[in-house]
Length: 439
Image (cartoon, rainbow, N blue to C red; front, top):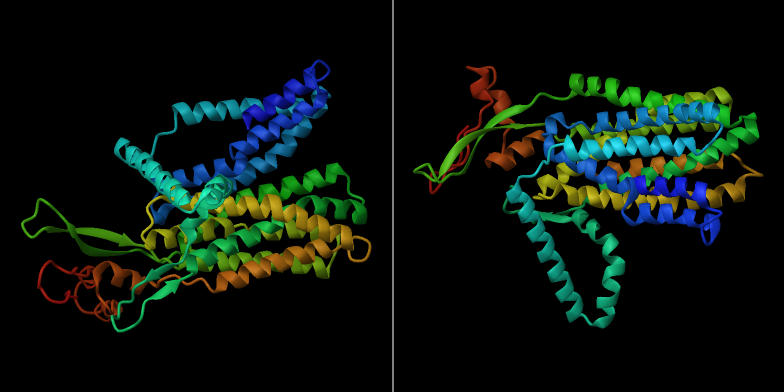
C-alpha cells in the first residue's frame, strides 16, 4: 500500500516526462492488488490476534473499533491538509508517512507469535501441500496443471469445508457439520452492504442537497460512533453479560508420569455467547435500515449512521464464532481460516457489491431511489437467516467433549452439597481399563 501511494506521488510530479503520461498511475493499484492490499493486511492482523490471545480475552471488537476510529479521523485530516496546502496530493504524503511508521513498528516492535519450531513446521507443511497439489494436477493431465494457478486464489476456502463429527452416543450416526461454512457465508453476505456507501452519498446529494462537506461529516460521525461502540461500549457489554468460565480437570499424555498421563486444569468458555451477540447485532442493523425506508429524512439518515453502530458488533462476533468452530473441528492453522474469510470478504465487498449496487441504482434511481437501502436490508436479512442455522455446541457438550462425561449437567445438581469448587470439578478419564470417569 505504501508503494501504491508512492506511485501516485511520483506520477503526479513527473507524468509529463513519463511515456504514456498519467496512465502510469495504474501501476499503484496493480502493485497493491498483487500483494493482497488491505484485505491481506486485515487477515494477517486477525491471525496475529488469534495467535496471541485466548478465546476469553480475544479483542477483535476493539481492533475493529480502532479501525473505525481511524476512518473517522481520515476525512478530518484530509480536509485539514487539503485546505492548508491547497493540494490534494498532500493527503498521499500523509498516508505514506503513517504507513512508513507502521512498517517500522511491525518490523522492530511487534513480537513474532510463533516459535522457530512452529515456523519451520509451517514452512514444511506449505511445501508438502504444494508438492501434493502439483502431483495431483500432473496426474489429472496437462489441462488441470495449467488451470491450477488460476484457481489457487480459492484454495484458502478449503479451510471452511464441512466436517463429519462423531456423536457422544455411539449408536447415533455421525453427521456432517455445516456450521463453519454457513457462518462464513453469513459473514460474506453482510459484507455486500459495504458497497452502499457511495450510493448513499449520491442519494443524499440528489434528495437532500448534501455536498461533499455534509457527506464527510456524516461519514466521520458514523465512523467515530462505531469506533467508540467497539472500543468502549461493546467490551463492557461482553464483560458484564458473558457467562463465567468453568474450570475442569483433564488428563493429557505425559512422558514423566508413570501412568502415562497427567492432570491439568483447563478453563472452558461459553461458546454460544458470541453467536448470540452476532445475531442480536445483525437484527439491530436491520432495524436501522427499516427505519430509513419508512422515514426517509436527513435526520433518519444520521440516525441510521448512529443506530447501525450497535450492529457493528457482528463482524468481530461472527469471526470469533468461525474461529471457535474451526478450532473445535481440530483446525490448528489460524491464518488459514482468516485467509478464507479474507477471500470471501474481498469477493463480496470489492467485486460483487459495487457491481450489484451499481446495477440496482442505475435501474431504479428514477422510480425508487430508496432501492439501495432495500438492497442493503435484503442482504442483512439474508445474512441473519443463514446465521440462524449455525449451531455451536452448548457449554455442557464442550465439557463432555473434553472429559468424556456424557451428562455434565449433573454437576449443577451437586452444587448445593459440599464445596462448590469440588462440585464443578470433573475427574477426567484415566488410562487403560479404569472404567468410566467419576463425577
